[in-house]
Image 1 (tube, rainbow, N blue to C red):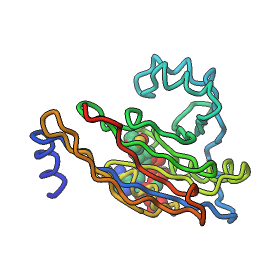
Image 2 (tube, rainbow, N blue to C red; image 1 turned 60 degrees about the vertical axis):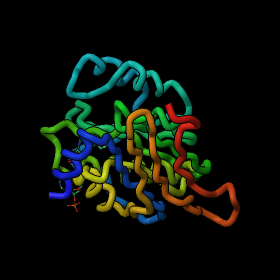
Image 3 (cartoon, rainbow, N blue to C red; image 1 turned 30 degrees about the vertical axis):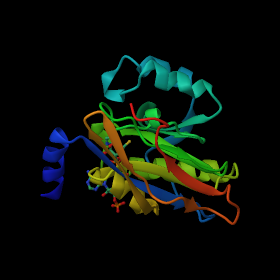
Length: 214
Ligand SMILES: CC(C)(COP(=O)(O)OP(=O)(O)OC[C@H]1O[C@@H](n2cnc3c(N)ncnc32)[C@H](O)[C@@H]1OP(=O)(O)O)[C@@H](O)C(=O)NCCC(=O)NCCS
């Protein structure tokens, strides 16, 4: 009911309301092994052949981003076919790279080195509901923990129940809500307070808006 109202209202006054979710990794074994799926880090060569397959929703620029050290893609494979993936990156996430599409300017994130941000997630429709997304996160948790990462964070539209449930099922907590509302040529923002990850001022996560209203 509320979601329907939001979608109708958004057509008149474009608004992008996202939840900020954070997962503090711990050393417990999470158990992605011994399933029907295999998990591994993918490089751009693994994904180039899939750019022309619309079901994978991969653009050339997304695949090319894997050539940078700041981006990691973890994939799930079933019988050697890629059936799901998640992209993770380091700080900063520029606002224009994290927008709800046209006409939004986006909301970015700045966070310390021991944090990774999940920003592109897909499980092929025929493999949904089999815990593939959850298992990718478990694998990613172990992959990043072994490299000194303590937190995985993400943002998602407040209406995306599927992804919200995935994140909550592994232990992400909602720590804030961000909104961008477009009124004519003005972009209004409501950003959550900085989220402290330690004692020093630098060890905090901030959501940021673009410098100027376009
Ligand atoms: C969101 C998405 C990645 C989920 O993948 P999935 O492999 O089907 O999810 P899982 O099977 O691992 O589900 C994990 C948990 O989330 C819940 N969940 C998953 N999809 C759900 C849905 N559509 N509705 C309600 N709950 C859902 C499951 O019940 C499960 O909970 P449990 O472990 O407590 O039983 C998949 O639906 C997808 O690719 N959607 C389109 C892209 C998208 O929305 N990406 C996220 C934003 S970038």
